[in-house]
Length: 160
Image (tube, rainbow, N blue to C red; front, top):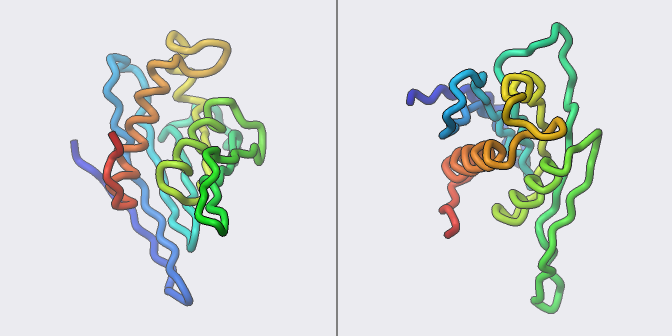
């Protein structure tokens, strides 16, 4: 599969900000699904992820319709680490986006902002959705594809 990358670099001051877009590979039998893309914006101490479909079934665009932020487990001064991440909805957030942002914050040990715009993808996957949320098996493929891209982009090894 050919990977297209769009890179925008803002001139560095004390740190640089980079933004790259990647196709999200999915291993699914649903051939009618539109392709998903993720834009990864690396900030100084956090990462902004914008995940969505390349086509929109509506003429209007909703900016960050499902937006959450998660923080990795905190390290205490005495060396102990809390075991839980904190995820917060910044707009109407689904349980799936809150859980995913929390998983990613814990995995990559950085603050994660996650914006999902899966409207046309969900509409195309309506046969594989439950109560407006993606089928768990399809959502698992979306998570795997996103982690696969982030492991390459953020230079992390996949954890077992």
